Image 1 (spheres, rainbow, N blue to C red):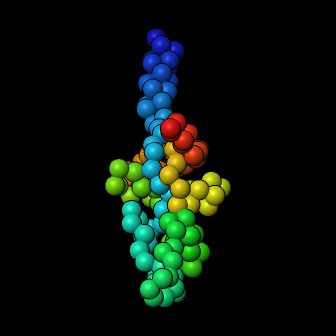
Image 2: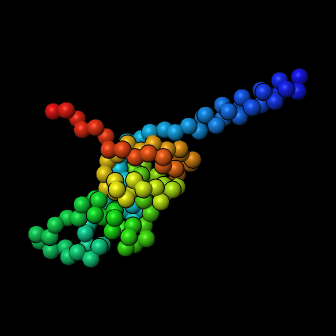
Image 3: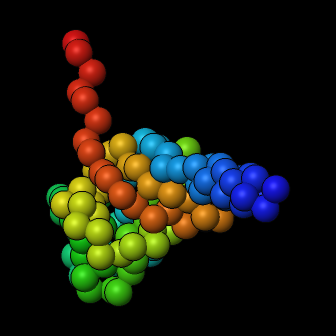
Length: 123
């Protein structure tokens, strides 16, 4: 009987850990300063003069993380999620890109396990 109880408890724990399985979302890698919307290049020292180029989302994200100690975030469906593992290699590589991100969510924080660029739509 004791072994049966142990087996039941072990299977229940296995089911609970399976419920925290990895999920995949589509969204954009951004930074905690800008979140869902990147601001003017002026915040990075660029002049707001006529003809000045707007900074790309990628350049803005990288600059905010490097120069302003911002953290990488993931934006999906207009909601901004914290990234729990800031040292994940694909974050810098895909900064400012729309990606498919796989990981585990706990509250508003995602621990990233995989980042890939989505396949381009056929024309």
